[in-house]
Image (cartoon, rainbow, N blue to C red):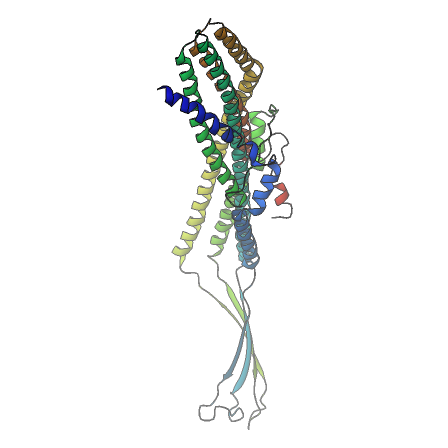
Length: 439
């Protein structure tokens, strides 16, 4: 048993420091706004949605346009026996005609309106996806922060355990302690090694996720994350719900789809009326015996007969169903947003209070308790288990403190995505990308 403990005591100190320095070796501190801008500039999904939006905008420009006019050239009443003799019969004519399809009044405007509303809905879908990407970057950013802080705490606790081992060895050497205390300290150090391996793997996974959001090589290192500051929110639940109603892209997109369905209903009702084709023909004749060959013209109007009423009633029913679906989805989205805002505000308040409690009360008290336990152990007033318990207690409270700091920022990012705007400033994070868009 003793050789194994000696081996661990030599192995663990050699392995731990390199791992605990992992966060410090990842490069300079990262800037969150710069990472967000990089994600929005590089992410192919944003580029694809922007291209899709432009496609729908061009489609809307086409929807209200007239069909091309039709040009007609023909020979009318030609003789089969002499197909190119235009002077034999006075009815033989060379005809030039033009015709234009004219939809029923209002159809063009409604078609254009349907296409524009579809493009508008796609615009808000793109903004909703942008909010998701921003939220993903911020969540990953603060998850990396918590992982790095956990590694730092592990490094500090490793040094504390080294001190414990030294104290235990000194007490054992003078016959005041037991060898079992040394074994326990080495075991605790091995547990920290196990935890470090897991945390390093977690950080690597978070780096890969962040680089995926930024659309850059997965091996690109992520630097250290500065300590965030907790600022209490000044907005109430009701105020945030009003901001969400005004700013959240998914709500704007569903309202645009409702407007699209209303325009589609009006267009479907217009389909019960015919479309017209107006035409003009100019007929040129040659002079023939008995005829002066006077030129002629023709005017005409043709229109379809909208007798397939079952199909047109189905078009109206389709538009009505689309409106009902979009209205139900809008109400469901509003309900989900209201409940999410209330839940996030509750969690933010809890995390804020916990962070203040840990920083201002629990952690200083745990540090004093550990210091007192070390002094008491040196003089043999407490056993080694009490010393380890004080160390574990401080370790857990410090991790909980940084977990509260990180989770507060994560919940704040989720609240921003839910509201569609920064809860502090009220500004939408995608406003700068939409400055040139108009509907």
